[in-house]
Image 1 (spheres, rainbow, N blue to C red):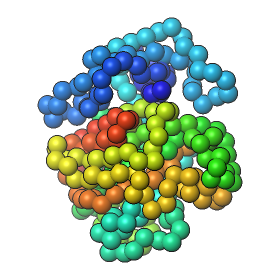
Image 2 (cartoon, rainbow, N blue to C red):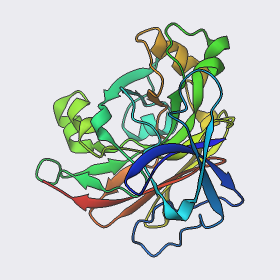
Image 3 (cartoon, rainbow, N blue to C red):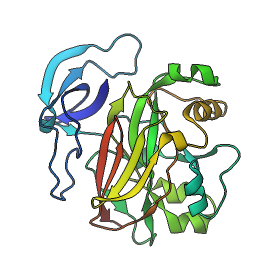
Image 4 (spheres, rainbow, N blue to C red):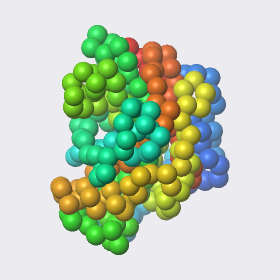
Length: 276
């Protein structure tokens, strides 16, 4: 099931996306690519999808092309994992850490499909894309054993862990480099039925493939990551865990269109602009 957060007539709600076809571009990015969502609809649900009990429909249904998709969740926190693909660790000049490397991104970094990634061009001379698989938690949890990890995962979405690479190197820690507003695009929706253990992840810039890998190449797999993170902190419903980016990271500049696609899930597209 695909759960989306959307806006129509200035009202924001959640809904179930249904229909045939796999959308490639959501909300558009102005690069001339066609929006392939015409055959999809969204059925509004009452309230939000993270509460107890079954999801209930309101009866309202809209063509997906007539709504604006928003970030599918507004997390209280985003926990991210660094250097979790071997070749990515090596392209940064290091070996992968023996244990998952945790860092945080603020909730204010989140944007949705079609929203602009704003380069802080007065502060950073190099801003990079990092396509990732994101886990969305469905319940409050702490100290989750590996065998029970599926019980706490609500679903998965696409993410872009945008990074000011020069600031990351300069600061010696990652809070500023990873924390700018707009530096965590999420979307286009949450896929609750995905087996994310071995799916293709692709990042393109202006249609050119920059990253291409599979989640089966994660050094620390999904169960390990969830167990490790929840041994440190409590995760709340709607919180997000970024699982790491594969090799192929690189800079983006104003006017670039960046798309993160995950097999069986969909695609997240954002345009880059310069800011202050």
